[in-house]
Image 1 (cartoon, rainbow over the protein chains, first blue to last red):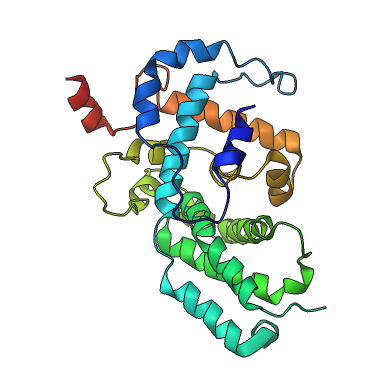
Image 2 (image 1 turned 90 degrees about the horizontal axis):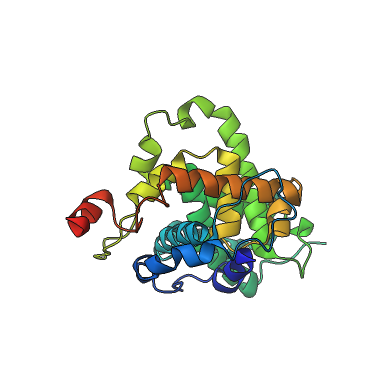
Length: 98
Length: 181
């Protein structure tokens, strides 16, 4: 199901990666929206009570979410974190048990 | 048993910072507060390293800490954090100025309108790359609960963003209007 795609493309902790062509996805696959709707019934068994979003809409939302997140991931790491961890290198483990 | 903060551990923690920040910013809507959360997370992780099981997912462990810190703080500051006038979205103007043609204002605004349990589930599964099982562990609830929250979050976003009514939710409304005009 769709979430497994996320696992392939959305690994944690690697800044700087871009996930497949922000923007382009969203405009290019307009025509496929209806085609996708019918493909989405493979995983319906566990959520009988919640209506399921069609997979085209789901993909749009997923793309948008990850594009937004990518922008955040690509921001430089503030110096305070590097300094914090550098300090811990010097102090050994004692910093945590004062 | 205590783990030394080996250089490789330091690197692993540093490598986790961008994803922790992205999660914290998306969760809280405030960069300053998110950075404080990340810093507290790192400090707490370092002082509890003996509880980390080597070989398990360090990122999942760090996200669990951050999420718990966020919620204990959230309970304290509930009134302040509630966002009746949508200022969450306004505070989220943190994207770098890099001439990006995409603007995520609409999306951020919609995200801010989700209940926080749905928002965090969607962020963990849909953006941070955790499985439903990992997310359930991070949030301390059942896998089915996470699936339901993610599903409801998507439904809600789709309706807030009118995903079915517009051809493209990428550009902001001005750009969209221009494109359509």
